[in-house]
Image (tube, rainbow, N blue to C red; front, side):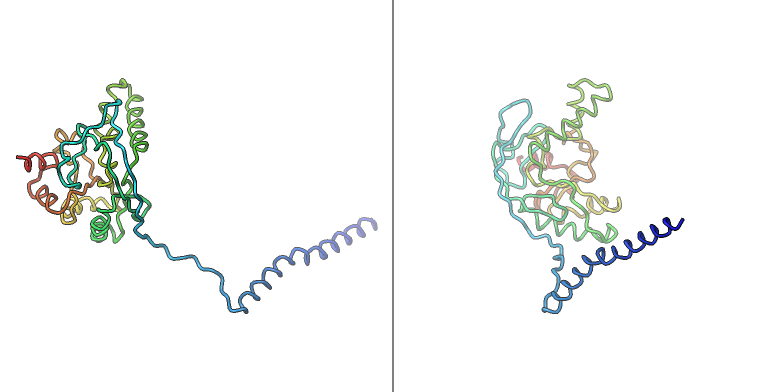
Length: 257
């Protein structure tokens, strides 16, 4: 019994001796911090988050599906902001984009950066005072191909053939080489409340944007309704499209005539 008591006392002494060793690193850190402060320095602070306009030049080659050669779209003679790209009109064979990064990390053609940001700022009042988020802007051909193939597989899982799935997928996701997102003029916008989309439909034209895919125009645009998808066409065209309740395809046909 006496041996057990002595063993217990030795263990307690060892524990008491170990505490100073454990505290030594903490004491050293506190001493270094005090010395750094006394020397007139302060610890570095995290910089404030800013979203500067970052210009990223990109040369893009159109990548139409099925290996078909890219052709100049019918709107090739139009101003850059009226370039028509849809399921029947591919991207120009080659074109250059200078991209600008927007809050959230997505990128768009730098020429639509300022009107886009003005529109998003104005929309805050109908979005619980929050800046609406662009969740998809410019897309590479690889990104568009991935989204398109994912949609095809989704329909295949429902029992459709590859051909049927590919045709149905085009109503929701453009085939690579046939997407406005690859131009850098289109954005998909998310809001804190659905009211944002009502505001955009009624006000986006003031900033040069249009509600690109109304459900009533699916047979003309080839795309199902997407309340989140907005496309830059310039203020003049946007105002006419809004006032006449037409889509971009109809507008381009009218100005040709």
